[in-house]
Image 1 (cartoon, rainbow, N blue to C red):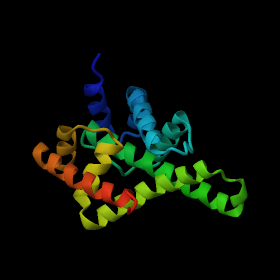
Image 2: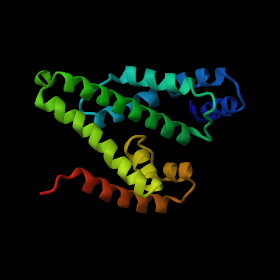
Image 3: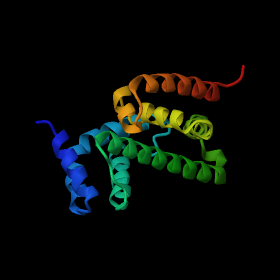
Image 4: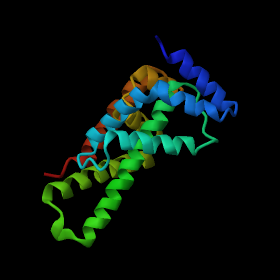
Length: 181
């Protein structure tokens, strides 16, 4: 059974102020949220949160945002992906701060993993400062795993523009994340 019409219906009800709509939506999108969480954790080598915990924290943030509305499932998944990314970054920062207090207890690999998560966030922030749309395309491609047509729909541009933006964003991020040799 295709859940898309039910997702769209729940999103429309939520936009009209139905407080139960988001709760009704979660069972319909839970599997996709777990996929997004697994994808997010793939970028988080430190694995600061388990997949289920990440999904649940993201849901709590969604449930607490009564003024947020979504035009379609692509907007919803993009938003949830961004929420998950920020949750992981916050956890990495807290973990780094804890490790600063006891650096002798942190293994070299764990230190490197935390730095990687924060380096990706820093590179995306730098890209955002230069070109907001390029940063949005990168986030949606890397973290929400959306296709070019889905990203185009979410951003209100055509798919070819998304492809060009993704090429530029990928080049910029690669330059930021590749150490100078």
